[in-house]
Every structure is written in C-alpha cells, then in structure tokens.
Length: 281
Image 1 (cartoon, rainbow, N blue to C red):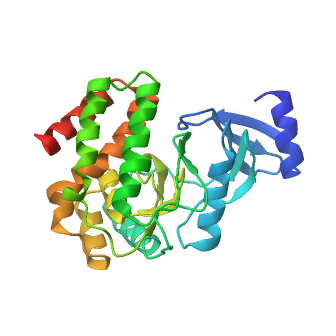
Image 2: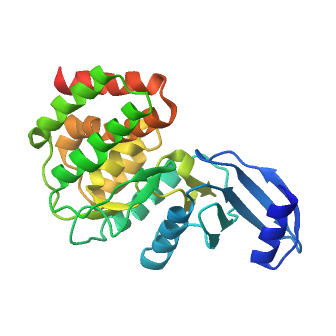
C-alpha cells in the first residue's frame, strides 16, 4: 500500500485508509484487504485490465440473482469491492445452494452464444462475438483461440496444438446444440466461491458469456469443486444429459485447462494431453 494508492482509495471512498493486508488470489495483480476509518473494509485489486471484471460484477448484480460483491469502483488498474466475510470450503450444503444459484443463472438467455462485449478469464482476453451455433463458438472462440494463445506464449507444444486441430474438426461428433444460450459465470470453481455458514455468500471473478451450461458443470469437476450434492440438486432443477458424463465433460474441461496452460504452463500441459488421448484415442 503506497501513499499514493492510499490517497486514491481515500478519495474514492471518502474515508481514510488505516491499514492493509495482502489476500490470496488474483492471477494478474495484487489483492489487498483495506481497512478504512470507522471500521469499514474493502478489497482492492490492482491491475492492469480490471475494468471488465467490474463490468461483469455490476452486470450480475443488476440483471441476475447471483450473489456477488458490490463494486465500489472499477477502472483499468483498480477495482474496489465490498469485503465479504467468508472462508469456508464449498461443503455439501454450500454445493446444494450453489446448484440452485447456478441453475437460476442458467435460465437467463440471449439471442446468440457469446456476449455484447469481450470479457476476461484469469486476466486473459475472452472473445465473445455473437455466434448462432454453440459448436462453432466453442470451437473457434474457446478451444482454438486459447490453444493459439498458449502456443504464442510458448507454453503449448505445437504437436499438442495439432491434436487440438484434429479434435476441432470432429466437434459435431460430440456436441449437441443446447436448446438456448445460457448465461454462465464462466469460472465457477472453489477459489471463486465464497462460503459462510454452509451457504454461498458470493461468487467472484466471473468470466461472463452465454454458452452451454454443461461447460460450467464441467469446470466444476476439474478441481474437485462440485461433487454428488451439487449434481444431484442441479439435475433436479435442470436435468443433465448422460452424454455430458460420457464424453462432453472431458471435452469441455479442455478450455479451462488451456487457460491454465496459457497462464502457468507446466503440469497443465499433461492434463490437456491426457484429455486429448481419451477423446481421440
């Protein structure tokens, strides 16, 4: 916390900064818990590229029932959010609550797959050109786009990229077009779900777009965030196709895996390669 940053936050909030503590999280910058005169607290995320996150949180707050932190201020290099007391793991009761919240979010639809603007995921640009078919959108603007970004960063081997091309050419073999585009949080894993007293207090770090809800469900299985309590509750509200478990879960986990390859490289490359082996043989 520099004097200049403290003065800037004080000017925005109208309250003097009395202290700050680093928080875990954030792929693109520092995250601080900032104490304010009078006992208030805000979370400060330091940029660059934070304006889309503020826009997404405000969109969720104004247009959906998904609980999110209130955005105090958002520009390209500083995002201020109301602090939410949490700290619990996503246990069974919180999973059931999350299932109801995400099922409700997935009821919201649009005329196309994509969004009215590009968003971000983990600080990376996430293109959202409105697209009539989900298979085309997922292939071009999720799978191939992020594979290209990972290759440009020197983190995805060209041979693995070639196998992704083979997969992309067969996309219609696995994907059934959903009945309608659904609004997705886009990054709903345990690190982005704040829980308190066995319930979800807030979802953070969204990566919004309209897509197939199954990709949201697949992301929830990737790092062990959601298990039987979540999927049982969700299936009662929005039935899950058996084909999701048989093949599409594997297909859809490739996108978040490629995001992690682009950001971190390392072991995530082997995760992509393992998924490709299971899908392509």
